Image (cartoon, rainbow, N blue to C red; front, top):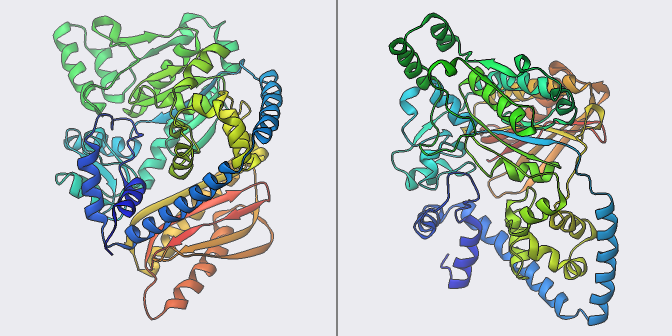
Length: 514
C-alpha cells in the first residue's frame, strides 16, 4: 500500500511513540517515529492501525459537522446544565480522605535486574520479540516501552536485552509488597501485580498518636542487616554499605529519591514522621528494604489524582496534592488530558480536534462537549476538569472486576496452552477466594490475526471459585478451539483472565492470534 501524506500522518498518530511514561522525556520523537513506522510497514498490525485511524477520522468529521449545526441557544441551554451539575459536584467534593496510589518502578525489569546484576547497566526489557511487558529506564531512553513489539524495540535499541517473563517470581515479590500494604490499609485495592490503591485515612488517625519507636525501621536486608549489626568501625561499615548498594538496582542514574540517604551510624535505622508524606515514605522504604526494589507513590484526596501523582516523580519518588480545592485546581490546570487514566489516544485526538489539550481547556469547553459526547463521557470530562475522582474504594463484594493476562511469543503447543490456561485460572481463583466471591460463567475470548474478535462461554450449574472448577470449564472451551483448527496448531500470543462481580460472572479471557 502506497500512503498519501494524510494517510501517513494518520498512521503515525496512532503508532508513534507515546512518551507519556516516566523516563521517556526529551527523546528525539521524529527519529524514533520513523523507525517505528518503517519497522511496522507491511504488517497486519500496520494495516489494522491505519484502518482504525481512518475510522477515528470519520468520527471526528461527523463530530465537526455536528458542531457546525449547534446554535447559540443550544449552547446557552447546555451551559446552564453544565453550571447546575458543576454546583452539585462542588457541594459533594470530598477532601478529607488520604488516598495513595503506589506503583512499583519498572517492576518486572527491576526484579530481573535485582536477580541478575549484570543487567543493571544495560538497556533491557521483559517479554518477547512479539510483545514487551516492561522496560528499564536505560531502554526507555531509546523509546523502548511496555506494549511495544520486541522486534520494533530491537530496531530502536539494537543492544536491548530481552528477558523472558517469569510470573511465578513476580507473584512472589508482589506478595511481599502486598504484605506491607496490608499494614497500612487492610482493605487496599490491588490493580495488578505492581500497583495498588490504599486509603490511609484511618492509618493517619492512629499514626498521629504513635511514639517514635513505632515509626522507626532498621536496615533489614538479610545480608546487609546482619553485617550492620556485626560491624562497629567505619571501614567495615563502608564495606557493608557497598554491598547494600549492590542489592538495590539503580533503575535510572539520576532518579529522584524522596528518602534521604543514610550515612554513618544513622544508616542503621530511620525514624519517620506522622504526616501522610512520611507514612508513604516509610512504606516505600520498607518495600525497598524487603525486596530491594523501589516504588513511586501519589498522595491525593481521590483516586484519579493519586494515580496521576504517582507518575509525577518517578522513579523512586512521591508527590502529594494538598487536600485543598485551590491546590487541586492549580494541579489540574495545565495537566494534559492524556495523563488522566482512562483517556486514551482516540479520545485525546477527538478532544485535540476541538482545541482541547489540557484539563483547563476541558473545563472551558464543557458546554460544547455536552452537546457532542454522550452523557457518560461529558460527565466524566467534567469530573476530570474539576479534579474529582472516587474516594471510596471497592471492597470485597463491591469489587467490580479482577484481571490478569500474559503476553508472550507465539505459542502453538497444545500442552503449553493448557498449562498456561491453568495458571491463569489459578490466579483468578486466588483473587476470587481472597475477595470471598464466586462466579458461574467462564468465557473464552479469541482474537485472530485479522483482529476479529469472538467469544465462547459456558455457564456452570452452581457458583464456583476454585482453580479446578474454573479450569474444568476453561479447558473444555480451549479444547473446542484447538480441535476447530486441527490438524493445524492453534497459534496463541496472549492469554488473560477477567472477572466481573456485578453480574457474578467469572471470565477467562484468552486472546488468540492464528
